[in-house]
Each structure stands twice: as C-alpha cells, then as structure tokens.
Length: 491
Ligand code: SF4
Image (cartoon, protein in one colour):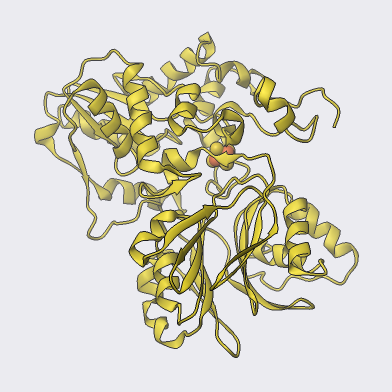
C-alpha cells in the first residue's frame, strides 16, 4: 500500500523526516525515498528496500541531506519521490493509493501528443508520474491537485513539496488517513500517527476526505475544504495499520481489542488458551481472552532479531518461506491443549494452513480459528496493498468456486445468516484443517471501529461501494445504508 510523512520546520528537518518516514515501514516493501528542499534546490534519494529495511538503506545518506522541509515515502510499487519541473515550478511528489483508471487517463493524455512518461523502468507507467502530469494541467498547485483528485478512480493521497511549503491532499473519499501534527518549531503531516510521539509531535487534526492543505513551519492553510462523503478503509484497523496509530481519532489496538471481545461474545467454545497469530492477531486475541477470562498465551513466537517486518516480500514462494522461518512453535504451550487463535483475516489461507498443520504436529488437541473480520470475498480495487492478488486467490472466493457457484451468487455468500455462507465457512474450515472456524460478523466489526457504516469502506467483505446510480452514497446512506449494487436513483 505505502505510507508517507512530511515536515516543514524552522530548523533542519532531516532526522524528523527520516524517522517519521521509517515509522511507515510496515506499509510497503519495495521502495523508500526522501526529498528535501534547502535554500537552493531539491535533493532526493530513493532506495530499493526489497531486501533490507528503509532505515538501514538510507542511514548513510543522512549526512548528504540538509533542508528545512521534506517529504518521505515507503512505496509498495513505484520509485518515488519524483522531482518534477513544470510551469508551476519545480516540486517533489509522493503518492499513496491506486489509480484504477490509469490506462484511460494515459490514453487521454497521449491524445494531444504533448505528454510523455519517462519513469518507465518497470515497463509500466509510474503512477506518481501520472499524478504529476495531471497536476501540471492546472493553473496552480491547488487547481492541479484538485483536478487529479477528481479524475482519478481508485484512490490517491499525496504530498507535494514546493518552495512555498508542502501541499498535503487526502484521497477524495478519504480511504487513507492524512494527519497534521505540530511541535514548537515545526509542522508535520503523516499517515501513521505512531510516527509522532517519539518525535515530540502532537496531533493537530485529521484531514477530511478530499481536503487539501498547504503546510509551512508556522501552520496549515486549507486550500480545499473537506468533502462530505468518506470511505475510510476499515481494513486499516483490522490488519495493516500499526497498533499505536489512530485514524479518525480511533486507535488501532483499541479497535482490535474490541474486535476480539465481539468475537468472544458471539462464541460458545471451551478452550484452554487464547492466542493471536503474530503480529496483527495479537490485539484481537487479547480482547477475546479478557472477555472470556481464559489465559492468553503465545504458542508461537516470532524470531524478531532477523525477521522483524510484518509485511512480506511480493514473491509468494519467498513469502511462504519467510512465514515458515519466522514463527517458532512452543510445544509446551501446545501439547494436549484446546487452542483458540484470533487472526486479523484469512486471505489466501496458505500460510495459515501450514501453521495449523504445525500445531497439530505439536499435539494440539483442538485448534479453533476466529478471524477478526468477515470472509474476504472481493479483492481491493481502491488501494494497492493487494496488487498481485486476483479475487480467486482469496480462500473464501476459492471456496465459492469449488462449491460450484459463480459471481452472481456472491451477495448470498456475504450474508452471514445464509446457508451459502455456512457452506463456504465449512469448506474453508475443512481446507485449513481446523476444529472450528467462526468469522466476525460485519456489524460487529463496524461497531468495534465505532464509525457509521456509510463512512467505512467494507468492499472487501460485502462488495458495497459508492452508488454508481446516484454518483454519491451520502444522500442515501442516512436512510438506506450503502448499496451493494448501483441504485436506480438518478444522478
Ligand atoms: S476494499 Fe478492503 S482493503 Fe480496499 S479500501 Fe476497502 S476495506 Fe480497505
């Protein structure tokens, strides 16, 4: 998916920028980069972080960087930041999101024969360069960013470093968070608020959907007010957000504890030990264990000295190997026990199947699984964190296919009270070799997060998205909730 951090300061900002960006390392595994502006020019550094962490790759560059304003990015795909020369001036740009209509936008731009893309190292157009091209169509940064936000389908939040400060823009539907922070002599903008306390920043406010601000060392000026409709990604709280972070003022770990508590309240199984699949299952498991008053334990521990990262390499075979090497079973906590595991979600299920096999090989008596969210039925088309995944990679979707049903039956499978849903869950349970499997119900997940359903993206689970019939969901959301399909109302 990726994450970014920016600083505008009255003094040199490099250390804040470096560590602030580093606190987004759980969000991406491909590129890490910084761009800094001093009195004379913009300087940038981009490193490949596929085999080593951002910090170790960029640490030795710090001595060469100097400046009072900068932006940094952890990218899961393209090289960034980019430094762009344009009629608006020279600027640096980082983006997070997914441009679903990239090919259409490029085709439109090519029509006038005055556009080209130069960042073609991966043989594909660099999405951040496309965003820069769209911004350059405006008469000002404000107008260009607004235009890019309006024409991009999918999502795009960005930081743009100029001579006059940093423009920070949150995606039109606020799928990713963007947060402003301050300390005595500097202002910062971040996606993850866990980047702030150790750098002495306090949260100032959360940008609204589509909001654009210009940040200087003295404050933030709103250049486009927030829009009404929001679709922040609910999966942030469940899985890929960092436990110490908050979005919309709601802390991730607190939500995970509430998710676990909701799972426990809906459950009737008797077990000896509750555990989390490390790391993101841990918060859910603590919430479960505290609710049922069963000991919480760690039958698996992670070998963190050399396998510290929560996100995995993109190559699936390497991912499976890393997953296997990283987790070490503690037989004394497994042998003869009825174990209940909380997991953030079941995506492909491949690694989980191996984990369950290892538990039974260590003589577990029973293994029960409680994912903190409903079955993943739809691949994400709004963010880039699941780029290589087709919907049929998803364990639940595979089960539906193996049960002989097609896409026209999906709505039935997402109804947790339907027979189809029960058959799908049973199919996944058998595939994984579990004693029992019970997923979180979507209303319980929504209530654990604490935002109204219509402000959350829950597309992964129920296929609901902003209505294509009326163009917006807000007017209808209050009375009808989100539409799983386009409604018949006029635009
Ligand atoms: S589809 Fe899922 S992962 Fe993507 S934005 Fe929506 S909730 Fe998040």
